[in-house]
Structures are given as C-alpha cells and as structure tokens.
Length: 315
Image (cartoon, rainbow, N blue to C red):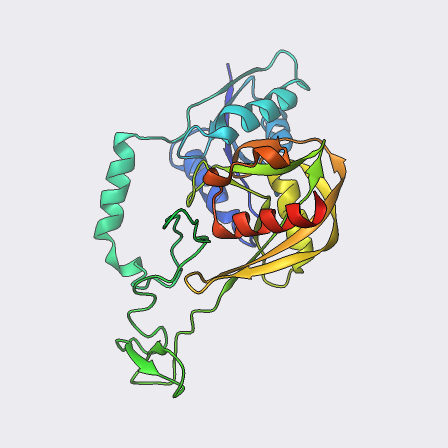
C-alpha cells in the first residue's frame, strides 16, 4: 500500500510562518525517504487539510497518515483536526487514513533540546518580550496579559554593549540604555481588543486554553496586529475564538493598569451570524446569565471590570 504523510500545524497569519512546516516536509521527503509528503494548516492559511489530502491522493497515495505537528493532545488535536481530516477523506472513498499522536513527550525531544543547548551561535541573548502572568492579590485579578520582563534587554542590539539603567527625562522612569550609542529600550504597551455581547439572554465567555490564566474565563478578544484597526481585531478574534460573526455597537471602555503593559479595548457588540463553538485557544465556550457570571474564575482584572460595566449598561 502506497503511503503518504500529511503534516498538519495550526496555521498563522504571520508572513513567512509557513516556511518551517515546508522545511519539515522537505526533511521527511529528502532525508528520511518518504516519497509522498505534504503539509497543511488547520486554519488561517493554505494549503488547507483538504488541499493537502487531495495532493497526497494526486501523488498516488492509497493510505494517508496525518501527523499533527503539535506538542500536546489539546482541543485542536483531539477535535479540530479529526473533523477536518474526516471531511477531507470523505471525498476519496476507498483510501485508508489514520491520524498519529502529536509530538508529545518523547525521548528524542529531549535530545533535540540538548542539541539546541550546545548551539550558542544562534542564541538570542535578550528577553525583550514581556512575560505573561495570572497573579491574584486580595481577591482582585490583575490584568495580567503581559508584564515587563525583569530583564528586557541585557545587551544593545545595535553595538552589543551591556545596557544600564538611565533616566532619559528628568521626571521620567529609568530605562535600559546603551552607554556606547543612542539606543534606548522603551517598554511600549501591547494593545488587545475584544467584544462583549449577549446571546440567548446571556454573555458569551471563553475558557482559556493557554497561559496565563489557563482554564479561566474571559470575553473573546486578543492582540491587535500591527496596522490593524482595533475594531477589526475585536471582530476577528471573536470569530477565531467562538465562531461568531459580530458587529460593533459602541466602545465600552479602555482598560489599563499601572502593573500591566497591556491596554484592553472592550467593545459592546451584537451577533450577526455563525454558530457558537469553542475554537482557537479555547477549552470551552459558554453562555452565562447575568446572575451566573463566574466572577471568581475570570481570567483578568480587565475582564472583571469590562463585564461589570457592560452589565450595568445593557442588562
């Protein structure tokens, strides 16, 4: 039986993000001797799983083995990919098909990590990306989407000189600055946008499948891409997370906190289409009546504040 390998990842809107999977497919084909290897993305890009499956059949495959290029057997691996593969296979009756386990915990993963530890020439010596956190203090949920790293930059990305704290403005904070050139690291805020709306008499909340605040509840939303309108980001994130098309009614409020670098823009919205479903980065999605909001299990301070404000104005 002529076998084909179809490697599937999540997919991304970021330019150039597909090169990695293309290289993995080429590695399997050229170095490991598998004659039919294709790749596909579960969502957010092409080739889709259907297109990848069709390509395997076009190359003469009698059995398609699908490998989820994921670390853990989460919602995408156990539900999303099997559903899409079943749909793709239905167009090719008589062709065998099976889905492997994801990468998971495997001894060779440890070997790869050890190998990476010995490769210092490609290491990134900085920690410029702020860290996420989900700390609760005195019963109040901090916003927690992102927080300044303890050591954002250690060395100047221009000249390599060690950075040192320096006050740029007399009344401003100390910033990491280069004593050898003009570089200054400014920890700019991250902007996120989301929607709050009612469906069947309740508010739709998402149970987070990622850290921080894994397993906690929040209204649909996410970070605004560079060059993207905040309203468009809120609509996009809602569709990606709960499979609903919404239209913005009005700006509810903007939430920012002294201990967080995230700025959250919350919009009041209404549903115009779609079917409620837990999708991207969601363990579950539920409709909560105003009296059943899980206040103690909300992910972030902004979620608590925005939902409280929405209820006061709309419910």
